[in-house]
Image 1 (tube, rainbow, N blue to C red):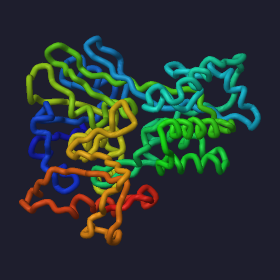
Image 2 (image 1 turned 180 degrees about the horizontal axis):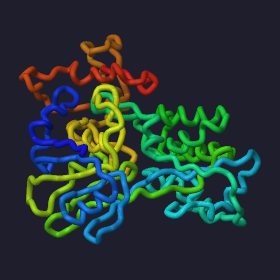
Image 3 (image 1 turned 60 degrees about the vertical axis):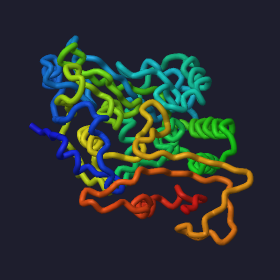
Length: 387
């Protein structure tokens, strides 16, 4: 059996940026978490017996004593010949069991869905004459889609737009479309090159419209991930947080879940469908599969957590605020990077981190706060000056 036990002592090894002391002593309900690899049948039996509390990343037969959380599983896409885009409206019946007809790449699971809701609903309603489809349907897992574009270093993950529906549409469809307007719109969204929310929304809608202009690859719908957890009154769990895109294998789950039998503490047992498939290296990668994400979500202490049902971030152990002034802020002459005497800035980001020490007693320094930016893609920081 493949399993991994996370206890209070082991958790101290999961130090994130600057060796910050783990803040989970009261914020985690369980004091010990065991992660196992189980097939669906074994997981169903264990959930029914109350010896397993949650099964992430796989669906099982409902035992009657389990609760269910749902999240975005993947996209159902089809490949069509050029000029046959209209045929996609007649392919609703081609979707397999469990797939949802939604011929628009931004789904209700995305935080920016309301920016596209009118077009998405119009696309759902515009069904044509149902035709027999002899081509190839493909299901693209949303986790695998995000993994190709994600970057992670020592607890930090990104890019910031990784969870946006327009970006998923870009990842899905841009490789099949050649249009300079697509790249220009995507680049503006990534750089924040807009002056208002209205302008940003129009950019997003225009980008998705351009991406759907061709039909070498067409989005027909999506699948829903169903994950079970023990809901028995005494042996189950409650307060189960989950992510709209990642489900139970997300940072919010271990920070919210509580065992019903214990007002505090307790032994939490969770499982994934397969053992780890990638190396574990918190500095440069790994922890990409369900098993690894469960482990890393518990061990790591990132500054910001992905908002479980949004496209932004939740402050975990820092606070950041954006301040603007028409008069301008004086740039300190002793700034880490000199901007010159008498310079001002119209905007500044105040980033506050509670000072702490490494586990050997060494005090945290300013350099410990900023070193990770050395590994950030320069394109993401263009136009930003670190003072």
